[in-house]
Picture 1: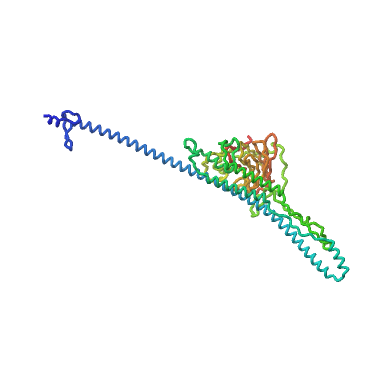
Picture 2: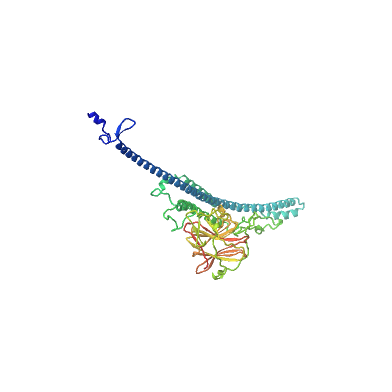
Length: 508
């Protein structure tokens, strides 16, 4: 009986079968209990399926996010590589410029020495000819048959003496050459040391493991060329030794130029006069050849035609118009200028209807244009001038690294030679590390910085003059270029430091 009860009991509800059913394996259950069990199991698998679908969707979204971040990283890396390529190109241009400058100084020293040697050789050649003439005269005297005549001439010969030919001391300025070589070796050693340092970037990352902002990277790369002014740096307490070293190199280069100027002021001195004493019979032996001593003048004009015959701006030897005594005299020539966006470097940001410019931390999305500067952060104005007199004013804010002047349309747009004043088709004043300099055709002139933040520029195209004025209570000229302009010239500007802002006066 117990066995029969056990066989008629449902193993799910533990009661007698209400609606007994048999499944293929031979087990018996209540139909209702079996349906309930299957529904519970189905719900469990539905929940599992929903959970899996959610996880699949989350994994897909995460993968899309990773791909998006990957694209961002790749784009950022491309921008960084392009930025670094530009910075390294500028570094190469700076080193190449320093190389040319050093070699030019050595060549100038060589030319000065060669000039002395050439002059000495010419004098010695003349003296040799006179000695030979004297020798032939003495030989003819020895053949004199008349004893009385011979004694007269002999007594004159005994009364005179002939000094040995004198060779003046001609040598290189060893101190100058050693200083040039020492600067070059120091630059090489410093760069080598800097490159050999371990690149443990993880130790240099700030808290949180985040990379520095682009402006920090930009300032670091700029440090190779310039030192930010006090109060203008993003990180004023941190000093880059490379900045200090390059400033020392520039200071040394300036001292070398001063050394050259002090040793060879304005003219290349010829050798000390060469004197010889001859018997009176054979000419004016007591005369000095000082009258024959030539003077080699060093070209001092900032604009001279190049030897390659190109149509370069030439020197204008006119004295030019008188210097204006007041600002009112030049305001009648005032021009309202705007910057040409098609020429702006992609790090130059324009505002206020293209009358204000400064360096941006980010590369701007400017379209490519054949007139755009790609190497130096420069820009030209839309207005160009081919005749007449024109005047404009520039207001400078934090302009420790900025420049302004004019450039011909043919100015290069790529490479280090596109920098204002580093070619023969541009003229500018430049603030560099607190110092004011005039630049044209790679020739630098140090100036006294005026106590004003507004500079006036007066272009007299027909007379060939470009003048810069200090605009304050006193209107005074800072510097004047002389050149014969042969093509349209445009107002031009250069900004480098992040806090340098140049604004054009609209004369409203």
